Each structure stands twice: as structure tokens, then as C-alpha cells.
Image (cartoon, rainbow, N blue to C red):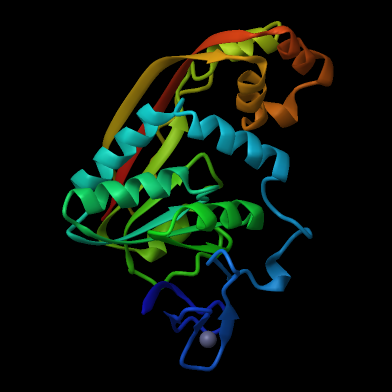
Length: 274
Ligand SMILES: [Zn+2]
């Protein structure tokens, strides 16, 4: 079976077999028992275990599987159904544990399309979790800065809260293909920030233009979620960038909370490759 991925050594198409991926030049990459493949050359790893750590991933999985971000996933599904052709090559760049890629692949199939869906992430642990749970998507450990995809091979690329390398997206998308970019809106997680910071600030509203792309639409999602139980509050905080930036004594304030109602709001920008 042909894969969406290409060989990280020579760039030729990869063929997917039960236990491995290989190219015609004879490069071969074993599949892990969960089904994913490691396509990150050793010299591009910056640390032994790049990407999100286990604690953060556990928090993400627990929070996302409770459905708090379902409005975001549903909107992404609808946008992909709207913009993707019937035979669609879809890439989730920075897929994490596959929450969005699995929803999108299922939605595309429900809409009668034939998705070939792939997800990559620099975190091996994330990709391992993703491929354990989601069978309709092929997953690889790879870098968003060196996507293991051929030029002009993708119909749609999603970036949902992960490192952005728009030149790579431009390269792998075909002409007329779509780049779907999720960014936090100004008051995203406002009440969570108020609980942690003395002087919280709103996110800047960003609508960037990227060379080679035209902006087609921006979908704005705004909702309120109610977190019950201290663990779900800690989980949400742990999966945000604030987790890394907040002094410990401020973060400790969250331990006193049993419930928290907070705004969630996202801007989803849809760009088309010119
Ligand atoms: Zn090769």
C-alpha cells in the first residue's frame, strides 16, 4: 500500500507493509508494534526525547477525551469536509495524540470522501498514543520543519497549536490545497488565566498573511466550559504553554480550586495555496 510519507533519506515514495515502510532505493523503516513509523533522522533530534513529555500528554489525553474541546474538533471536521476534494490527502502536522486527526478522518469518510490521512509529531510518545488508538490514520515521528511528504502531494494540512513552518506547508500542498491554522483567540482560557495571574493579559488577535497563500475565511469559535474536579483544571493548565511560563507559587493557586468555568475561544484561519 502506498503511503503519504516519503523516504527521509532519498525522498522517494514509501510503500507501507504490515511490519515496515520501504522505498525503491532499499531504505527500510520498521513499524513499531502500535503501527507508527520513525522518520526522524537521528541528526535532527535535538534531545533524547523531543516533544511533549509524558505528563503533558497524559493531561492532554485526559482533558481532550472528556470532550471539552469538542466544539473546536467539530468545526475543524466541518471545514475539512467543506474544502477537501473527494479523494483527499490530509496531513495533521503536530498531531499530538491524534484527537483532531481521528475526528477529521472519520468526518471525511462519513461525508463519502476517500481520505488518506496522516499525522506527524516530533514526540514519539504522542505518536505512540495516537497510533494505538486511531487506526484510520498513519502516523510518523517526524519534524514539522522537514515534513516527510513529497512536494505538492497534500490537499489539506492542519496546524492546531503546534510549531508552524509555513514554507514546508507551501511545499507539500498542491496548488489550490488548504492550510488550516488554529490559533487561540484573545480571551481563550481567560478565567483560567485570572485564577493564576494577578494581571492576566489577553492574547493578541493575529491574522498573519503568508507568502504563497491567500486567506479564504476565519471561523471564530467561542464557548464556555465548566471543569469539575481539581484534576481536570490541573490537566488543562498542564497542556497549555502557561505551564512552562508560570512561577510555581502562582500555579499552586489552582490546587485550591474544585470547579472552574472558563471561556474557550479559537480562530481557525483557512488559507489556500495560490
Ligand atoms: Zn529511500
